[in-house]
Image 1 (cartoon, one colour):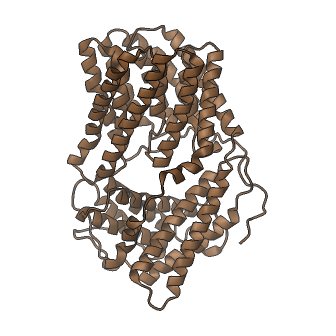
Image 2 (cartoon, rainbow, N blue to C red):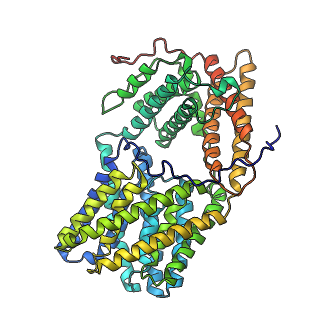
Length: 566
């Protein structure tokens, strides 16, 4: 099929409606909030008792690692947290050694920009999850401008590593009470999302059946959300590893049911899906559904597929690395030219903007500016109180730590209202400073970083976004053809058919995510929108056919081992 010759459909308008709208808090909003307080409080209170709050910046580097990995199964979380701690300490080491060797601000900004680009790319390539590279860049950039000698570096790194080890323990501790909590939440979300999609059946025009592009309807939005939720549930279960586990095995069957409901919504009872999701709360028994033994054959096949090499995952991120390096460097240089004493604030602001495309980068820029400006007002109101005693200063920082993580899930700007005064108060640990000067410099650096950072995002194009769609389309077409060939056989092997269904489902989820990301990118050739729509239509029809062929679409007898009330 030839590429569409339609005029470019990439949006050129910068959205404002909805950018600051508050969403619902996440299911586990309190977990990162409580974890970061538990990770930060003991080191800071210990330093307070010793009269060495000036060292708190180094312990904060390790403590803030507790923000990561809350959606990951505990076996995967252990690895992720260890990697984050090592990455944090490694970036801190580079920053401290550089700071001890030179005081040239231009050199320091340049090193900070390059580190920001490396941190951004590796966080995206490894999909480490929120808060991504921003915390790493904040710590390493601030450390570049901290007075330092080579002799002090080992001790400061030791503090960061010790606090990082404590953060690892804090992050892993909930697993003692609810060892399958993340997988249960992901599975429940998939069941609820597919139930919401099943509710829309017959209420809107179904693009998989009509042959028309109804993108943007409630029906299609519900399907896209369900596809993403099901794929996220699989990724959570796959990340837990292949070690035999009865609970995860039961959860896998539930996700299969969600996947089947996604492919055949007409045969789905949404009430039963929601009942199954409710039974996943707490630590009770996982509902078990009646199903064919070959339901999970596709999962076994997917586990056997090796992960893409890291270098192949890094390649498509080259434009994003260039944006981050150039944007952070220019923001820092502009701050220096204006005579601001902390150019790393402008650098971090620029680093925090860069998202999957220009449109999302703009939205994040608006959120960052609004949140920071409101945050400096909060700081100005709180700082007289914080100056009463070092203990009050520490408690204020802990309160803002909690508030930032509790609120940021509703909208980035709301979390920034707490992050900004927290970051400003941290600078007070070493010595009391003029509040008016801090506020002025932070406002200037926020505006400089946002304007320069977004300007670079517009100028540095990402032509690879279109290539990503082509690759995703090819993957979907091949997966659909493989499934269609099996459907044409009189008696396809159950393992082969299950594997084909899983491959097609994953390919469709990847295509939608890739198309959404590319749709907000500027300065590229026209995207093959018609091919994307047609591929999704035919892919979902084939997916439904595989479900019917497997005979797993019926919910007759699919009851739990306990009393589930629809």
